[in-house]
Amino acid sequence: MNMRSRGMLILLAGLLAAAAAGAQQVIEEIVAVVNDDIITLSDYRRQHDAFVQLLRAQLQGEEYEKQYERMKAELLNTMITDILLLQLGREKQLNVAEQLKLMIENIKKENNLESDEDLRRELAKQGLEWDVWTKQMEENLLKQGVIYTEVDRSIVIEESEVIAYHKDHQGEFVEPEEYKLGGLYLSSENRGPEETEARKAEILAKLDAGEDWGAVAAAATDSPTKDSKGDLGSFKKGELEKSLEEAVAKLKPGERSPWLEIKNGWYLIRLAEKKDRRQLSFEESRKAIEEKIYNRRKQKKLGEFLIGLREKSFVKILIPDPLGR
Image (cartoon, rainbow, N blue to C red):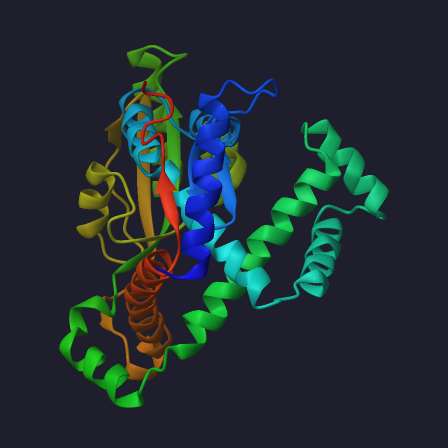
């Protein structure tokens, strides 16, 4: 047993003895001991509530419940990992002061804020204290610094790997068909079937007479095609609603579809341009391949590094399910 582990056992024994003896000073419940640090029940609850708030802002119903259960199952181990990374960063005396300063300057610039005081006021509006926020930013940078020095910079990707990956995974590097579309939309919500049919016939007559597509869209259709003058933009295969894509696939550039019924309305589609599916060259694919190899290797190395870091440390979980008791 190393000296750090022996010291932690003595600390743990002392804390438990003090609690058992009913000392006059109230000692908060300890969820876990991580080397020289502890995770208290308040720490855990604070982190838990922050994650819940974030999840509730993004998800609801069954998806929320699923993600919550996953988060709750991983939360304590995540907190332990964060502490281990921070401890190693401080042990290695990593200095992130300049990075923090640069990050704050970038945040001010992106949000058109002139000074730190302006940023303080904006944070306060969101219920965030400056000292707490800057400490969180500093700790995040410190954890990233540890991962960079211990994992990221050890990853080397050989040119031969990139070439082999491209050769063996041709199907991953294909640019799908792309359509540039015009569209005329008529809503059926505020007009009856007879009026809708009359408007559809009127629009077709104008187009058959050679009137400009954009002018017809602006004068005779409903939003959004009225506002865009009949320009829907470009779509890759698979991005359109199924019935629209099936209709577009039958068109040649310059042709238009029949009126297509969709929810709450009708669309008339014109295919302006079509780019055929094509295989990307090696040079076009290189960056994506390097990222795939890098991310896969990083995930593996990071997992191994974190397992090793935990094995070398003293970690004692006292309350495995802090909120489930």
